[in-house]
Image (cartoon, rainbow over all chains, first blue to last red; front, top):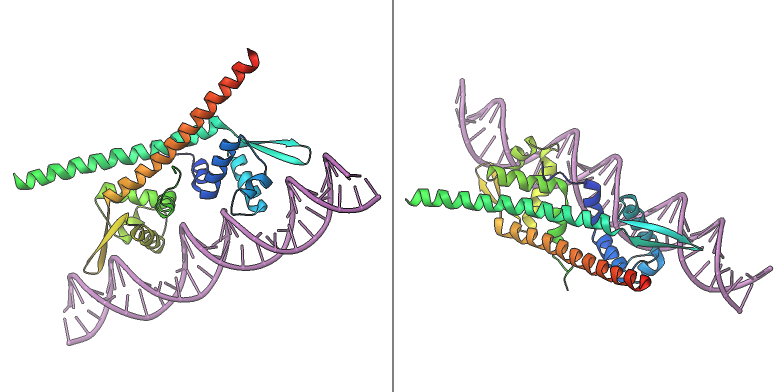
Length: 112
Length: 112
DNA sequence: TTGACGTGCAACCACCGGTTGCGTTGAGGC
DNA sequence: GCCTCAACGCAACCGGTGGTTGCACGTCAA
């Protein structure tokens, strides 16, 4: 239970370049592989591949416009990903808290 | 600003197998490559590699005991990782909120 | 029509998660 | 003291993926 998340979504958001791309797309309200590649330290082709990944998991959607392919973030889907992210964080946080409490109890038991 | 996180830490926690390993180590209060591999669908060698990664970023520390090498989670470091995780989540959440507000304003502007 | 720009496709490379295989070393029974 | 077994480390290898270069195709504009 719990830690079981959409592994595709996670791995999509897990890549640093893809995170930066999402960031840029959000900031600029969309973009193409070419415009993104100009703001990133990777080639257009690399960006295109990433856009394919993001598209496949529904984090972006594409609108063909003439010779361009404009991508925009699917905010709802990104919100889902972010939610799952914090869910995982929360799970671990909870477990850490529990461990800490148990450890303290043991310490107290030893001393008392 | 903001999305700048320890990339090593992130990628260490980013791997699903490593997440499960941390989970198991927390649950059992430590373990060796062999004991972990028995609870995971991967070989001891794979686990050993992952433990190396986790050790390098300080998420676990190792205690040689005879012919065994016992690993335990560094809870403070894991707490840091979790914190950064939720920080990223929070950043995106905030940006999404902002975008949403702007979008609504535009909508209202169009209609009014 | 021609040139420039944006794209897609394919081949190639490097890194990484995973495996198998083998050699080493420590704990314990004979 | 030896021999065996268990845990480990190291090295070679394989498949997937992020990244690159190179090239061919469509589209917009002069």
